Image (cartoon, rainbow over all chains, first blue to last red; front, side, top):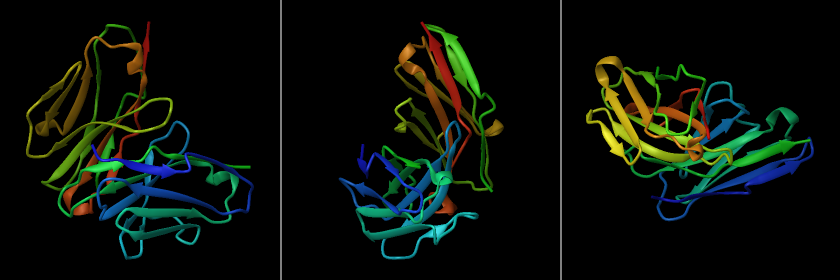
Length: 116
Length: 115
């Protein structure tokens, strides 16, 4: 299957700093990328949907100024957690989709963010 | 709005037992996709199966099988002769065709297979 990578896989930062997470589709062009967040022992919750070259669409309750998403190319989307706080500590997972009609999604391995 | 319910929070079985994980979904779309994912302790999501709403055929892949019934809006997952390596959290997910491919996940079922 298609491969999606995330970098870094794990990051620890101090409160107040910003952290950037990259999501790359390695062998296909992703028209759409999704960002999910998963708290310990909970399910994945969709944060936002990003399409290449346009602004991301955020789910209700997700602060767009705190979670900046950039989808500059068909193979790269970035999520920046600005002024991170301990409550932002979570597992962030991206997924990528190709095509407009096929809902096959390929998930990245996830990034574990710990904010001290 | 789409919704996925996995009523079983935790299941514990002994190795070689068969186990079925339940998944019930709600959607107003006629075209949608259902998924099962496995999340081992490492955290990485492992894709298991994708099924579209027009294909109700049951599927078998090795020790895994899936039973899709539109009449009851269920997409259950059975592991035959379970093994310790099957221990993980399993998520059922739904993606509506009209919803730009966004997936809604169930809360997950934690499966523990004891030796």
